[in-house]
Length: 546
Image (cartoon, rainbow, N blue to C red; front, side, top):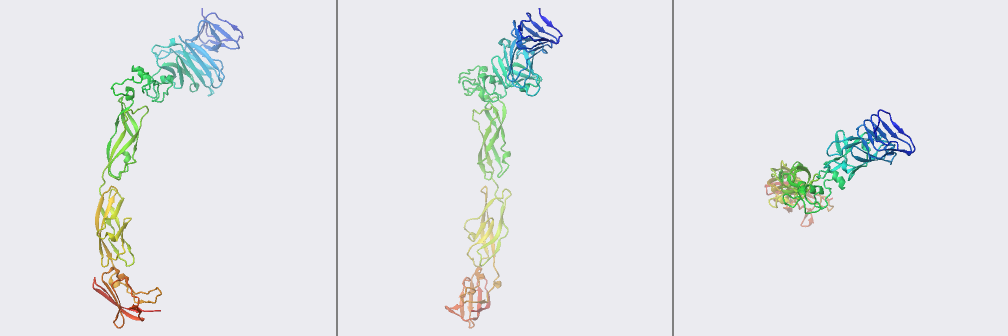
C-alpha cells in the first residue's frame, strides 16, 4: 500500500535520531513537500516517487531500502538541495526509469540548487533531461556538475555522446566538458546558473574544426576540437582513427588507409588537399603601370580533392618586378591556406608577368639654339632640352659620340652648354648630335645646329690709352674681343709711320717696347684688319708712363 499525501503544504522532520519512519514506498503528489532538516536525521523508505508539483528538500538524508534512486515522474516535480557553502558537494541519485548519479559542487556564493527531470524521447539521447537551477541570484553563483548514468539506460546505437544544453529549442553541444565512459562533467556552471538550464546526454556529430572527427570524440580522445589538424592518429598516417574505422582501414597500420585512385595519398588527405589552383598564370601589363596590385589579386580560388572550391589568401613577391623595363618576370605567390586545407601535392602559385615595351620618345626640343660668344668665358649656357614623351618623364640625355662639334659642348641637367677653351675663330655655326634614352632602353637621336653670335667688329672697344710702367695695372694694350674672329691683324705705328708692334694673336698685347727698348710717351697709331670679312679700323693710342 502506497502512502499518498495530497494537497498538503509539507511534511517536516526535525528528529535528531535515526528512525525508519516508513515501511512502504513513498509517493508525493499534488503540492506535497517533504523537507528533511536537523542534525542526524535519516529518513528511510523503500522508494520515493515524485509527481505533480511535489518537492523533496535535502534528499541526502534519505535512505532507500528497495530502490537506489529517487524516481521523478513529473516534469514539475523538484528536488532541492540543502544550503551549500563554497566547496560543498551534494550527491543525488535520481532518474526516470534509469538511474543517474548527479553531483553538484558549489564553487560560488552560498546557495541551494533545484533539480528537476523530464522524460526525453529522442532516439539519440538518454531518456531523461535534467533541469538544474541555482536559487541564489546574486550573480556570483557557480558550480561544477557531474552526471554518471547506468550503461543500461543508454539507447541503442548511441555514439558518439556528450553533455548538451538546451537553449530555446536547440540542443547545443557543450565544449568545456569532460567525458569518461558513462560520465560527463561540466566544470563551470556559471553561464547557465542565473536561470533554469536543461542538460541531457546526446549523440552529436558537430565538428567545429571540420576535420571529420566529431567534437565529442575529440574531447574524449584528448585532441583539440578547434584545430583541424589535431586529431587522434595512432599510426601516424595522417588519417584520424575515427575516419579509418568508418572506412574499414586499420588505425594501427600506417600503410593501411583508403586510397581510391592509388596515388599513394589517402582519400582523407587528398579530399582536404589542393589539387587545382584557379588563377591566371600569365598576364600582360602596360609599361610603367603603377596600379599593378589590381592585376595581382590578394586571393585565389582552389579546388580540393573533394571537389570543394575554396578561396585562399595569397601575397605576391614583387621584389624582382620592374615595371619600367620590358620583359617577362616570374612572380611567386605565398598561399595562406584556409583552416584545415593541406597541400600534399606541393602546388604553388606563380605568374609570368610580361611588361609590355614602351614606345620610344617622340621628339627632342631645344628652347634656344644660339648663344652669345665670349672672349673671357669658356662655359656658356645655350638652351634647355625638352623631351616629348607621353609615357614617361625620366630620360638620359647625352651628346652622342665624339663626332661633329660635340667636343665643344656638354649637357648637364638637361641644359646644353658651350664648354671649351678652344676659340673656334671665325665660326658662328656648330653641329651636334644628341641622344635621349628612356628607362626602357629606347633611344632617339637628333641633330641640332647651334649658332654663336659675336660682337660686331665695329662695336669692339679698342683702348686708347695704356701705362706700361710695370705696376701691374694697364701695362699692356690688347683687343681680346677679337679672339672669336679669324685672321685678325693688329699693328701699331709711331708718328713717323714706323711699325712698332704687330701680331695676329689677340691674346698677345703690346708692352710699349720696340726691340726690347721702352718707347717714349706720346701718341701712336693702330690699324686692325679682319681677313675673314675684309673689314678694318684705325685709331690713336696714347702711351703714358706715370
